[in-house]
Length: 229
Image 1 (cartoon, rainbow, N blue to C red):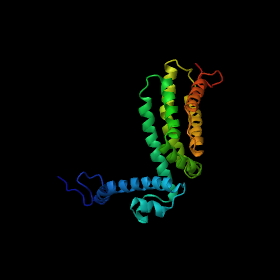
Image 2: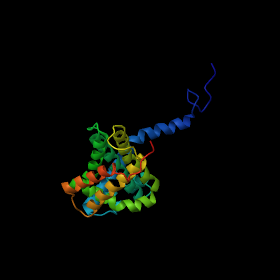
Image 3: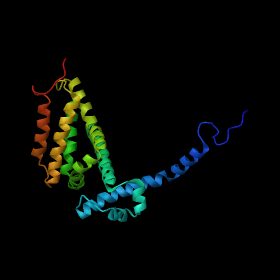
Image 4: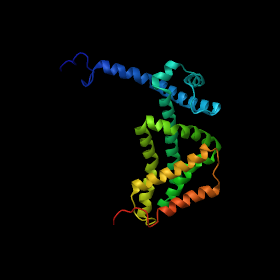
């Protein structure tokens, strides 16, 4: 049997030096994940406590019980942390939307559940405050990180697009341009919700019903763009 060449692992596929680096990183992985989560939570806490959308790094690291070195180990800037806060919130929202939509078998009912889930961020007081801080930062962060924002939007739009396809397959609505339809509904629902939270207003049941009914009606109107048969 030939000897394993010096500097390679026993499988002969990667240098031992690389394996050593990977082992070191693996041992630190859970620590780094914990640090990132602590910084994200600290950012949310500081923004809510200080009623600010522009928290200082020093306040965030103090709240997290970490150091500036730990902060800059994970984020190049405060804006990167704020983007991570947006990302975390949006992913939680996607999970919530999926849970609510799974309660329905009708595609159109799933669309309504999606709309209700978006609007719920303006109904719950605590969620509205957190959403307000994110919404007030969104336009500036979108300019800095356009690709990340579009990726997050598509993540939230995905279950809505699937519901539109299902609704068309079930004959509840005419088959349309699912991509553009989802984007239009997303912008209407999200901007409406953000207007409420930025103005510190809680939408009434009538407000919620109107948004849902308006979107549902639009999906079946003759003016809507439809795909050829």
